[in-house]
Length: 420
Ligand SMILES: [Zn+2]
Image (tube, rainbow, N blue to C red):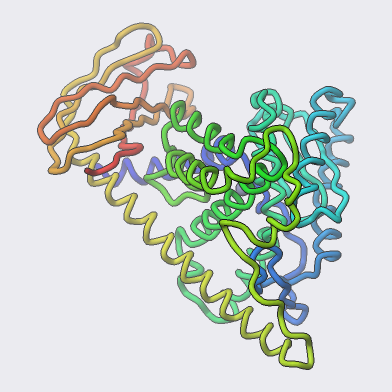
């Protein structure tokens, strides 16, 4: 029965995570024919100076990445949807202004980027490896704080800076070439994306500080998501860091770079700090071609891909462990009954039969209504939960009518917990 819960949950929840929680889909869009292994080139990683695998030089990346966005623009026009300033002149000007400030302190400051505002309600923004950043109007409206909007913009710019849209393609090719079995496995792609998200977060928090935006703003976004939605994915392989980890990690980076932050204005040493800062320093300049540079490049690429491969494998096993822990915890929760509280909420009582004291316990539920529509809700449990303790979790949502409670299918799970 527990297996059923897991399987159903996986099928039902993943699309929710991708659509609603990612806030970012930069890796989805680039799909054109750059699988040509013969065209493989490596290029120097802009951030650390190390080599990373890439199948296209920057101008080719821009051409391919922008072509994807231009297709989208055409489709929007054909569907009669407004764009940019015509859609919302105030929000578009705000987007352009913040993008400009972030880009100026970034590794791509020599490029001219174009913001694109589209008429969509979901919390989302993405880049495709070119010089566009596409932002949904809904995200702009939800993030009324400029520091928070700048955090999202910086994160998207960072994906392109770190070469993620193209690295992934190169990596898949490498995996195919070397016959890597793990690369084809369940969870591997999610973990690869997950590690890119963490890297983009690190770079973005630094950019925010250098541009004069509160570097802690990213952590505020994720802390808020966590309060509202829990982790949403600890039970499943996930492409993005779960909300609590993401809030904690971005907060820690913000503390590291806080010395660079000049509220409201650019750090005068921004250019030098890009090269050398508390997060990374550039390694020695690569040898020129003919002086061993070609060999160094080749070795660097192979090694870099290998190291990344190991990192991704570690993340796969870390996520698998998290899933196992959360699933095991759910089996230790003995249900003692459900009580309808009012029109929009109900309470569930459990006895915890495990061995460890639990902190940060968040119970989750998947609700399928009569029409087959599935929604997910979480209920944080306050304080710690000791072995043997009886506790209540109250699920509440204005979107839910408990009047139909008897006819709803409920699947409970442990969304988050920290073992003491
Ligand atoms: Zn991202």
